[in-house]
Length: 92
Image 1 (cartoon, one colour):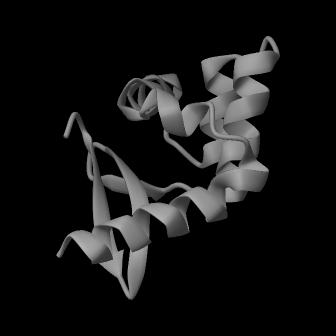
Image 2 (tube, helix red, strand yellow):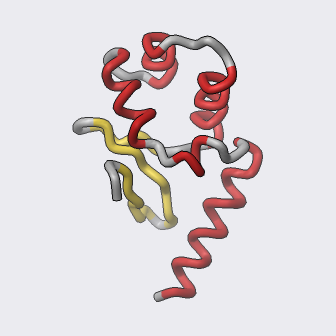
Image 3 (cartoon, one colour):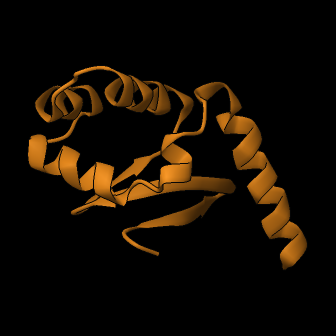
């Protein structure tokens, strides 16, 4: 799955793995990502905002993050996550 995966903890959470870290995708995280995409934010600043060790981890995070997640508006994230969870439950 290209460095990212799904973890199940009562519900489906999207998690991006960077080294040994697992970073759950949340509405707040998507707001930071959207700001990174739309402004001249450096990888160092992105790493600081995400609580990563440095720009290298921020770069690995951005590489592992699926584009469809990156471009999902934060206000629609919970809806999309629930929709995927329902689709997965029906497919079992």
